[in-house]
Image (cartoon, rainbow, N blue to C red):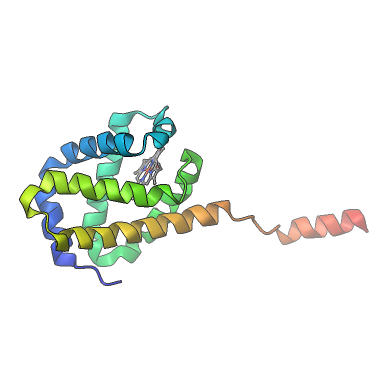
Amino acid sequence: MTLDLDTLETSFDLIAPRGEELVDVFYARLFETAPAVKPLFANSDLDKQKAMLLATLVLLRKSLRDLEAITPRLRLLGARHVAYGAQPEHYPVVAEVMLASMAEIAGDSWTEDVAAAWAGALGLVATAMLEGAEQAQAPRRPEPRAIHATVAATA
Ligand code: HEM
């Protein structure tokens, strides 16, 4: 997928000074749209959580021209999300809520092109995170030494 990098960068830079407001709006909208995910955040320090989400968005903005560089980090982030209880079907919901929150903060400067560009970028983030989640859940093949031990034990 080819991302419209200029559009992504310009639009994010307009929103960035209001980044804290963006993540406030995001969580308010998320819990309103998808109340079922609220228990997943029951033990979260929400202020810390908002700061970490914003930092991830800023990292994404800085890495747009070299997404491969952050793909391993996104996969690890996705792997951690398995333990948080995030399910694959939650990802489109989170992306939609993020797009709506960005649109709210950006106001008139948020056009269909900008929305499409961000839908693409968030889609790539979700794909990398879900790859990491899948790897984290995949049954591990036993180590050769473990196989030898089993063979020896049953011989
Ligand atoms: C674009 C996709 C997403 C991004 C960029 C993102 C980002 C983050 C970040 C940076 C953290 C901080 C903890 C860490 O680094 O491990 C976090 C935690 C968390 N996220 Fe996400 N997330 C995404 C999708 C989701 C989805 C789909 C869910 C499911 C509802 C979810 C639920 C949570 C929960 C429950 C925590 C843990 C809070 C805690 O235990 O304090 N996230 N997320």
